[in-house]
Image (cartoon, rainbow, N blue to C red):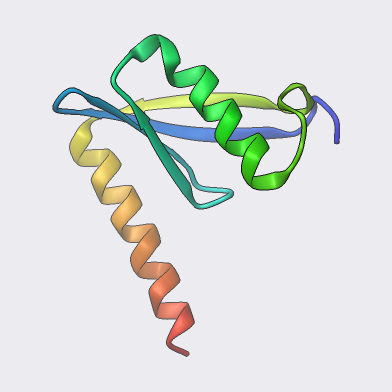
Amino acid sequence: MSKDRVFEAVVGKEGGWWNIWVPEIDQVTCTRKSRKIASYTRTLIAAVLGIPESSFRVEREMVSAAEFERRYTAAVRGTDAQEKL
């Protein structure tokens, strides 16, 4: 893999938590500290895919808590609909 691979992370704050969702790997993590968003995102992607943290880039999109919930819920429902077929 090369640094040309880019993952998008959708980030929304709800209460005291920053929720981080990486749609491409359909995984979520969270942190209480905004300064940890980048490292948690990289660690999540690397762990799930079994690749080095230095082998990709991450672009973050900050959204409201409501928008985060809307997108994540829509994705989960889309996945569930496909599994029932």
